[in-house]
Each structure stands twice: as structure tokens, then as C-alpha cells.
Amino acid sequence: MSSRSEKLQIICQRLQQLGYQRNQRIRLYGEEFVLISNPVPDGDGFAVEGVTRSSHKTRKMRIPLSLIETLRKEVDLELVDVA
Image (cartoon, rainbow, N blue to C red):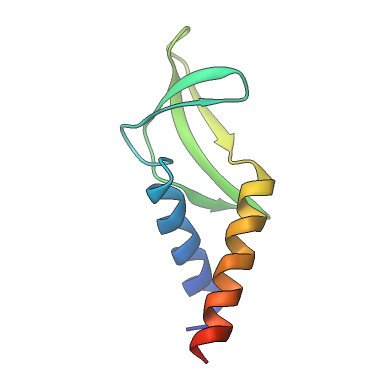
């Protein structure tokens, strides 16, 4: 279970468990959003789409890289423990 696509899928699942999932309300980068998508890989990180509560505009937001790096390390450690 060490392929890149499997790792990306695990990280997406963990992000959803942390509240980055469709229909959740979050505060990110100083704004409140209602998420309209689940996390998806985006370049070196992950992103979600949401509607701002103030202007009702749809925006794509990158999830903070510090959180992504923490999850990557956890997934790598779990995969090493399993092997």
C-alpha cells in the first residue's frame, strides 16, 4: 500500500475526518466558507472548493501545507509500521 495514488487517497480521507469535506463550515485564511467539495490533490498540496458566507462567491482554497506535511509524515510512518 505504498503507491502514490493510495497515499493521496489516504490523505484525502484524513482531511475529510478533520472537517475538510462537503457541507462543512470552516474558517480558513480569515474567511468563513461552506465547503462544496471534498479535498482533491492540487499541485504539491490539496484544495477544496467553498462558498464564502459574506459574498456567496465560489473559491478554490488550498489547505495549509503545514497540515498536509504532517499528514504525509503520519501516513509514511504507518506504512513503514505495516511493512
